[in-house]
Amino acid sequence: MKYSPRVVISLFCSYMLILHITSSTVSPALALKDCEFPAIFNFGDSNSDTGGLAASLGPPTTPYGETYFHMPVGRFSDGRLIIDFIAQSLGHPYLSAYLDSLGTNFSHGANFATAASTIRLPDHILPAGGFSPFYLDIQYGQFLQLKFRSQLIRHRGGIFASLMPKEDYFSKALYTFDIGQNDLGEGFFGNMTVQEVNASVPDIITGFSTNIKKIYDLGARSFWIHNTGPIGCLPYILVTFPSAQKDEVGCAKAYNEVAQHFNHELKQAIVQLRKDLPLGAFTYVDVYSVKYSLFKEPEKHGFELPLIACCGYGGKYNYGGGGCGATITVNGSQIFVGSCKNPSARVNWDGIHYTEAAAKFVFDKISTGAYSDPPLPLKEACHRSFK
Ligand SMILES: *[C@@H]1O[C@H](CO)[C@@H](O)[C@H](O)[C@H]1NC(C)=O
Ligand SMILES: *[C@@H]1O[C@H](CO)[C@@H](O)[C@H](O)[C@H]1NC(C)=O
Ligand SMILES: *[C@@H]1O[C@H](CO)[C@@H](O)[C@H](O)[C@H]1NC(C)=O
Ligand SMILES: *[C@@H]1O[C@H](CO)[C@@H](O)[C@H](O)[C@H]1NC(C)=O
Image (cartoon, rainbow, N blue to C red):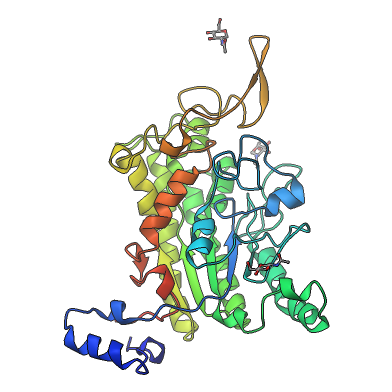
């Protein structure tokens, strides 16, 4: 691929130009300008849900949210999520969930993610059991509504107008994605073998690409796409499949291999999207490797007991005997399932989700571009990939 026109440095600033010429060590990446991302639109599951499932189907209870917000705030964590750190670093408030009818402000973006969301239509949906009804196709449909109805509301004026994104924000915004973990989970927890789940990956990825194309067709240009994490390191897998073979750090090997296969296919799909959608800037972000480093070398990064849920009850992984925030009866007495002593040194919050400390660690690593393809930092993710 050639240098794209959008990767050209602004020549208006002669100082920068001189700096560029005199310093031969400056790499092209360093010469790129920061992007203007006036808004963020996020799509995903609980890894980035800032209140969607809570508003629509019921909120998590204490001790969720205890670390940072000091109360449950619709996040499946003790505190902030990676998407919160992304919003903060771009100078924006935390994203309002699209589904939240109370006190939302979409002036700098919206969050369509809900916990338990999948890419493909799930077989069983909540509240009866199963997965979120707001799978990726629905999240796209909600984005479509926001895009058009927000402008009608702005034109109408009045108190709601200022809560809507400006029209040009839709093309300038950063579009973030973190979804796919539950498509694998649905297979594992259903009656599929690991090999069958693995074989379903191409179809899952097709569902992802289809939605990316539809979002691009509505004018989106900058895409920041997280791959899926090491699902085999999470207590909900380790406890459900106790006989799974473990790797050297104690994660369920085959389950992580399916995640890696998903990530390989996702990366290939993004290569194809760059060809099909030439005006788009697509950043593939290897969240898997950063999360896995927390299981591999926890002490090096200031963490301990990465495989064990901080908030939970039962067994070797402190999971499965009663959910975080539940009150359970053990030996005839009632026990509240609360959090561990030091969540800031823990990786896993409730057996499925990461702690705020882990989210902050992941954000600090991925925002530099060191885990991205192309290797551009978050603030430069509007620039198209170049070689
Ligand atoms: C909505 O958010 C923007 C950005 O933070 C802020 O400037 C504005 O005051 C907010 N509007 C209301 C009504 O809170
Ligand atoms: C798995 O198969 C059993 C027996 O055929 C069935 O009862 C059960 O509902 C299936 N579970 C799922 C999640 O499809
Ligand atoms: C998943 O499928 C890919 C492609 O067929 C294969 O290379 C890989 O070994 C499979 N992994 C597992 C865990 O079955
Ligand atoms: C419940 O009783 C069992 C058997 O006596 C004992 O091993 C266990 O520690 C008890 N659990 C609690 C929470 O007291």
